[in-house]
Image (tube, rainbow, N blue to C red; front, side, top):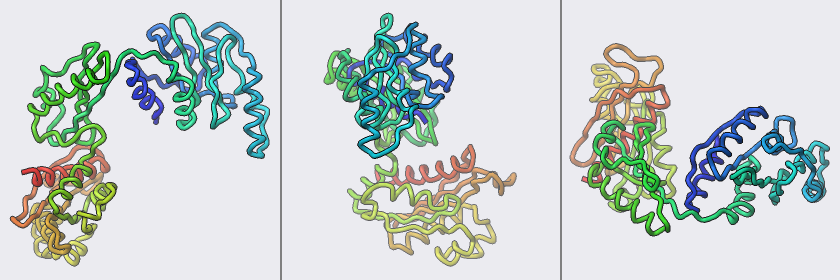
Length: 391
């Protein structure tokens, strides 16, 4: 998983530098040469991460030398720093480690204060090129100390992301179609994952305040269009929003899970301070657990089946009463890949939400594989609670 590109794009946006694309290349020198060459043709700034280690599959410095048409030469200062690195740690240095002191002729070394692989800075044609080590901690250290301060300020870029749940991407796209733009200074796009649709606004201006103003103005327009479909923004999560709402209202929650097997409880307790509002949960995977721990009537299961609206209702009511909570959630379903039938297919999930006024049950047939179905069920349960709390 490439986490380096996301970090670098975010940091570059602070300088108003727009990222054209991320490219992932295998350990093949000709492929790296091609990738660097194409990037140089298209961009004034090219940053690579990885491939600066001591082994035969670390080929980035060789590829840059080939692009520039120069030889690799040893940087004496880097060689001494690498030797000192091992001496200070009382470790034996392999001769291959000195490979990391090589650089294309005419380039500059970027010191790595926490690892053995220095970065490399070069100017070729009309582009500035920076080769950074791959390990994220080393990459960030070299970038923040040696690269970021050297980059020119090209204005400011602000990204604001609005998160929605409960409506498909195509419907959201229709509702905000006239607001979705793709110009040099303003871009609006959507992305869907696990039932959640995020709307990302990217605004560019001469300074930070202007960029923020543009992004905020558009965000307000989208809020007006979509209303409570939007549950949060930027780093906020559905479980985090629920936690804040429960705290403010002084309400408590308990959960009863069958097909989700504790996933909902894990989501809720991933938020620090969840003990203020989450009283506990029951993973009632078997029928016996539903009967003995949640007082679901055995006849109800026999008549309707464990995956049914009446059982989800009884689970929600039972866990609410057991923990003396303000809200109880009950989830039962068929996550697959086996266990489905024509009448009750894989993906069928019933979600019960109980409060002092009664129980509401929602039926879903979620698409996807087992993990996706379980996750969608949990997020849907949290969203129903959010809507109840905001009513």
